[in-house]
Image (cartoon, rainbow, N blue to C red; front, side, top):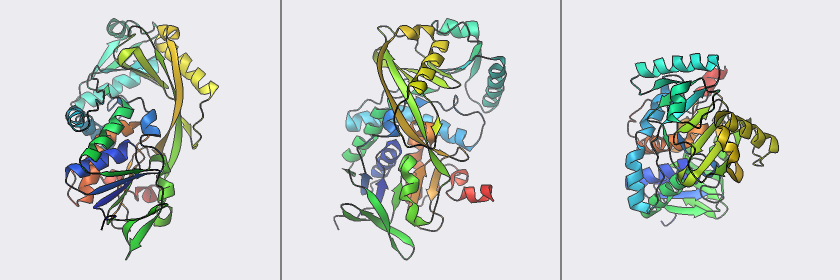
Length: 374
């Protein structure tokens, strides 16, 4: 049948695109449905950091997942370029996690010790050493974690790269089609019901970001997840102010090609409102200037906001529905959706094929919160 597929993916962001790409590489007939435009939500708004070590403090399951995903990007860059012609903008010039207080200095040195014991490349730079590396840094910088392996990509290009590569491999992509509910047979998923008809599959993957809970309403599963708005702005300079990504508490500065710099992001929980506020951007401007004073002379470009999916325990949901066979969920990646996209595509494809995954996904299972909340 024309409307029958090996897998149906709901969501046209970076996570849905990565899963579609991975399944297509394995020879699956795949349909991807997006209710809006592709890469139009959090994926298109992200700064693109691959901050496996800068974002995560402990050597836990999320840290391991993030490191494995980060390591996939060099090969991914090559494959996506060959299939789609899209350059994902992978840059590996390291990341500086800035300490502005003695307390932050002590905390970051503790994290460095943990990561070094885990075999990771990371070192402490004094304020003077950090400014020697990046002269534009403020004199208020006491020191920094220098993370050589943490890099960045162009988030919209990565998302479109996954999707265009998936399409080149045969994935059918449909925009402006909204999934209204799932079709079930004997308690198992059997497809989706949309505003443009039914599509049939024994495997349905919900990758709707912060909107995933709405999609799961009729499946008797409520995820402990909520939306978080993040406001950002960008500026341009005639010459690059710095080459490393600058990461600090409450603010990051990501240098892009051509002298463009993305600054983000506010954290406003439990809202789907994508408006950008004067207070939010003003706060980011002050924080950015406290790190790199000369950014105040940069030319203004634009502002925007994205809605990111967060979970109660900070871990994404990756797994099969506990009672409905064939219904899979991949959401809750919060600020690490770009970073975790590559590994998410692989592990979800393993789940769909009922293959053992390389990593233990127990910490990310869909029903874990019921144990935490009782």
